[in-house]
Image (cartoon, rainbow, N blue to C red; front, side):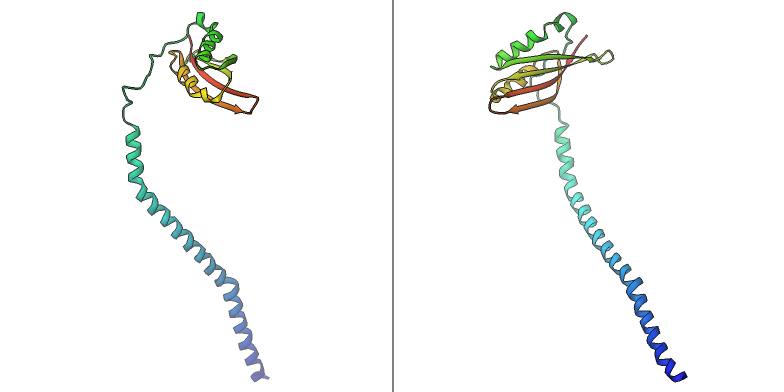
Amino acid sequence: MKNQSSPILVILCAFGLLAFLALVLYPNYRTMKDYDRQISALNREIALRQALSPIYSKLVDQLRMAPSTQLKAPEKKALDVANTGRLAQIFQEIADNAELTLESVIPDAQSVDQGNRRLMVEVVFRGELLNVQPLINTIVEQSFVDRIHRIQVRSAEENKWINLSVSLLHR
């Protein structure tokens, strides 16, 4: 009886060892292979970023150069309360210059912040979209315009409009 249990015991031990290898070591081996692939991908990414870093730094330095003296930058001055009532007329003149139709001028009274003295205005123009660039240039050239925050353009065949959210200097 002792001789017959010995080969069965050896087979059971071999089967147990194979099961251990299959259930414990092989998944760890696969996980290690996945980690190796991820590490090599990260190393390639690091090498690429190190190669591009001088180019990026050079571009950032070029952007930090002083603005051209040829650019038009009007001296900014706040729109006084007397002219705030004329906003529709001011934007109508701008629309006429850009060959557009002024649809509406809606000041946002809640946006008036006494600390930074800005007034947000929603302005809607209708007309051909070819005239957007002259319109924006004319608006930005105004001394009381701080910046244009948002530009929405709708180019449907019958319904073409440009909606601008403009921040005005206000006192």
